[in-house]
Image (cartoon, rainbow, N blue to C red; front, side):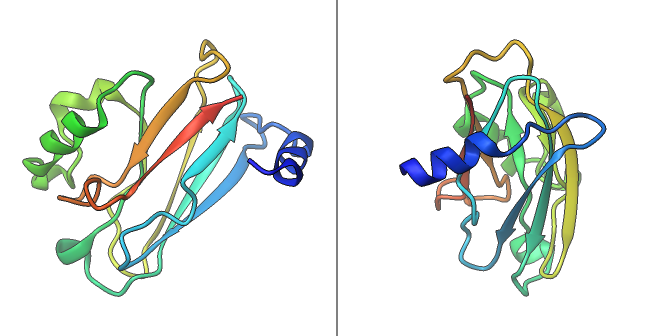
Length: 148
């Protein structure tokens, strides 16, 4: 991270349950998250807003944002998600792997989720987030939430 960004990140107050810090991520037909790294403090509360700027319906090219718990296998989760169309590609048998998620969105959709970074997460811990629509992880639709 460049020094100017690090300084700016250090001055942003940590989010609390009463006033979560908002992070906005845009997605679209390019199958990329606009933000691929989020830094947060252990115990910080965030409000993640996902905005789908694309035009395709969710059945053709839906997007979601799924934050996995530390140590969860993103590839295994994405593979299980392929068979979970009925639950918008959130496999119920792997629900323990998920810390937070948005709804599956079609073009023009928007959703938000409020969650707290695990208080026990050590500095340097990285948690993967991904889109679970089939093949989107493999096409690069992922990022990390890093505990600072």
